Image 1 (spheres, rainbow, N blue to C red):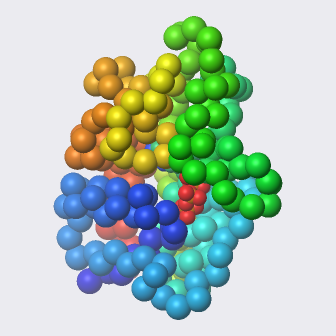
Image 2: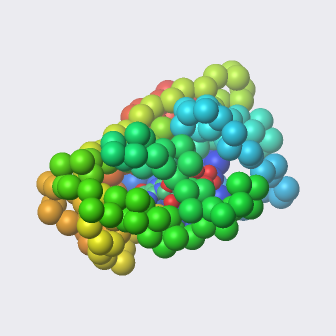
Length: 206
Ligand code: ITT
């Protein structure tokens, strides 16, 4: 049985990634998380890109545990805001740059406010998920990207999912990501598209 450590502290991501692994029916892989190990170092997300941050998270956890580590960094990139909140998606509504206090709800509210009165066609947005797989034995890191396109809704809607899901309107389903079921989201999301490619790489790990 291959062991892989999920290098994320976000419980909502862990839930979705575990679900995606089930959907992809990956045999002989045991998914561990940071909480299965003591004192895993915190990672400062100070990279300039999602890729930098994802690689950093996977390397820290992979080197600490000695096991292959899977991380991902995700951002919501809004065209009208020149790509904001982007790599700062988790911290978008933080009042103090050093303290991470913004809740999912704060972030959604800020985004809706920033786009107040902006016409529909200018509300284009995309979720980008950059996933990294680091193999500490070979000191090799692989990255794969998943992108999904939509619009920032006029108002938040729905209570499923997490983060910006209530404000991310997905035209193909004519619903926000918080209005579709977790099964549906996990079959088409940015995270699914990135992890699907990473799973192919996991199969080749020795
Ligand atoms: P880790 O770094 O520990 O993985 P994090 O929450 O800090 O966890 P990110 O830096 O990737 O993760 O933050 C991205 C933020 O973007 C996250 O806090 C959510 O607010 C949002 N986000 C990520 N994936 C999302 C999704 O599938 N749907 C909605 N919002 C999402």
